[in-house]
Length: 438
Ligand code: DLL
Image (cartoon, rainbow, N blue to C red; front, top):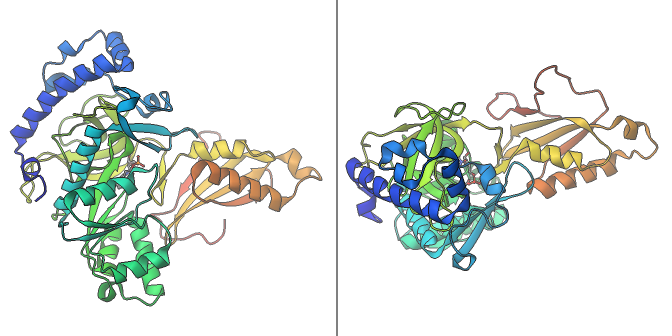
């Protein structure tokens, strides 16, 4: 077991470490990040007012916009020279939110990721095929380093190149697959299409899947296709990346590493802390982040947390299931998409009107469709060339989102108008019927 001591901490040990680290972290953030000093002053408190975990509710929240406001370098508590890595993820506008790491932060992240692999049943002798995207997204490098830290051999295949990916899976007799659950489903289908029998021809035994919500049905389907154990991994770029929480072999919840993250659940509307075991928005405090301390960071992810000892012997609190988000962020094939980003792309496209609809559906992989009305004046003018406008619109969307959307241009006045809040997003992924035509 990797870092057995940390993995098997008892509940009171976890609380003790959390309290010690919390008090230090609050002072560190106050002393080194002007934003926190200002916020504490506004609340009329100083770090001295936080004497135990019972006082943590007094600390002001941090939100994603705080990171966006600190573009490009993010909330930095150290000198830029001490930063060894940046990652970034999409924000609610075109601007990404940037996160930074010191050497110590990298060590902590790698340790957490290695613990996740180990908890999921991965051994140093395993060959890990890492099909998460490498780059600014934390999935690729996070899963890569964690596997190396544990002592596995890594095949850094990244996303895409599906045919080659499948061939390597067979040739190398890969034993662990790391990717989004939707890509795992696609890989199984593609393997069959290319004449492979995924259970017979491959040697997979564990899957490390996350970055997007997935159902028990998806788990059964992936496990049946490959004959592996499909384990859920949760994380977000602001909290290092993947590695915040992972499923043990019990497969009934994800253990949050309590010695590095202090979790609370709050009512997303009032901000009030909820009693243990009640469903709410998860709020995390990172207990030893150096480069970019985050106190009470609002994740927007809605979940229930359980604190009892798990059958596996771990006491680290368990996320029962991520039940959704309190904002309108969609995760399409592992990529975070805010409807406002699509709106931004449409607004930038000359000739496009203001009424649009976003449809997300699941074929083999998630698909994004955008139906949009053409501007009336443009539609009636001699300049209007449907194909040309379609090309420009698609290009603008891809430029902002980094993923492709299928666009359909509509005659002005076609989309239904509403008196209240416009229903811009139709999510059909959990529906029975598939759409054929947009
Ligand atoms: O998705 C980090 C990651 C990479 C996690 C690979 C796991 C595996 P972001 O791009 O910042 O970071 O997106 C974070 O994705 O707030 C959740 O809404 C969602 N999410 C991540 N993991 C899960 C999961 C990475 N296991 C956002 N189940 C989070 C459900 C998840 N949702």
